[in-house]
Length: 96
Image (cartoon, rainbow, N blue to C red; front, side, top):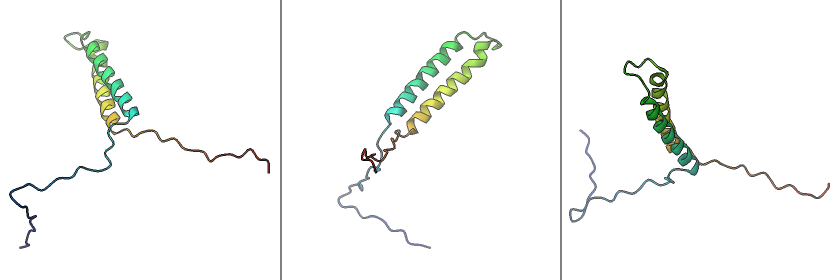
């Protein structure tokens, strides 16, 4: 059997857990996509109120796609990175 190494603590204190570095949060583009997804979910639920009890009209067919699409947009917005701008090299106006 292998021996397990245990971290020694003093005075019954729990070892400190460091936060993950590099977590910058949600980008501004991501926040816009999340807001759009929330609007899409709200529209999906409003369309759902127009569905008939048997679920055979346009609202009953369309609302699940709106709701699930809105949730997908929210999830996508969480992981969407900030847009990177490619810098062009400076051009000189001096004729060659």
